[in-house]
Length: 175
Image (cartoon, rainbow, N blue to C red; front, side, top):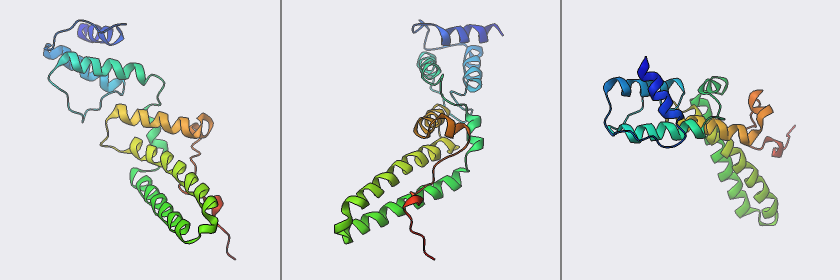
């Protein structure tokens, strides 16, 4: 247990602590378990053999992700397969709009605006896709969750109100 206090103190240390590249197995285990508990490194991620560099990695992400959402937020998002489909839908929609731009030159300005909206929506859904990707590094997933929250706003993020994958307000109703 004393190693956990030692490693946690190293993570919280205000400057890079002077540590060796090699560490005892108990110290490594403490760093790994603390990193998993802080959602900075997942159990599926590989570790280098250099304790100093891994500690630096954990310290960096401890500081940069303090305001990032926890990975549990992924449970409120659509599945990664559904999100991948929504990203593909957006990509196909963008291709359609680009084709329309080439054909309907007189509407180029309007279609450029539609394309801009579609690209903004893609950025949101691409960040959701990256956040829900189970094979991604945990620090990266949390950073993507923070990006989603920043793009849609805190109220929408925490109430689960994500925008549509494509600008549906541009669709015309056909009766």
